[in-house]
Image 1: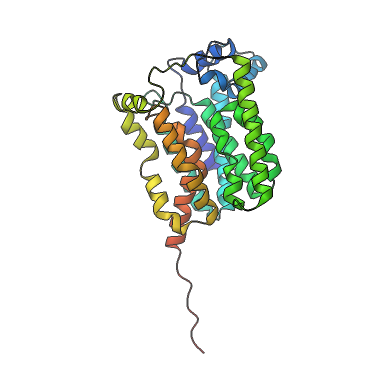
Image 2: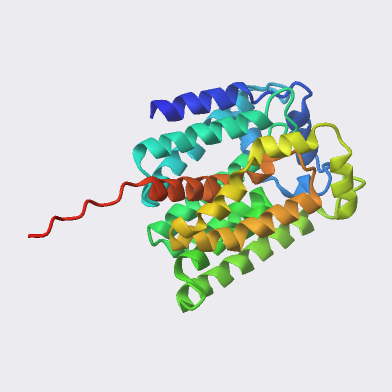
Length: 305
């Protein structure tokens, strides 16, 4: 618990908003003036507005954001610790994972970090961890209702049903049916939010495709920040796939390649918090699980009698 508290405190210290980006985003979203895609990700900012009203803080006060960031970190590190235990990681390895995640997050935040406050990205990671624990505990039927909130927070939650398919495979009819229901609910919520707010202009001129990739490569420090976040972890994950369990192996192939391809193709390269969900849910535990199994001492042979 102490490790989780310290890690949460350290990340919170680096979660500043000197340029007022997240506060401006909250105000423009709730006045209906935010751009695509920010306008269609209201949940985390609705929580902030609720905190502002409940605590009596003004729209320019950073304290509700700091409070929410600390709670977000407590949930991410706490849920990750529980999930990693179900994946078979030892307590010391789980603590190492939390330290690793805290370090990765800290490199992308703060005055020099390009990820700003990343409010909805942290919440997105929380939903993925909750979904993983529901699947591990056999509460698969709760995945579709979870999608209502998850999609209202961020459309990247569309990968959540992949947890069911990674756990049960494509041949189990119940898992496949629940996944399809979850995707239908996600589509309904996504379309409803877009219909409610109407069309919004995109805020990036080079928003999609090779233009965005070239735009990112031409911006200062985008490539270093990308590698500061993901480092060699994806490559290490590939190297350790054979030593990881089937659930993580399947989840890696179902989510990670598509996630990285979509975000490199459609977002600035250096925004490392775009990769927080797959790093926390899949890549970090997969690498550590593989290393644990690789380094585990071989069982002693019983002497012949």
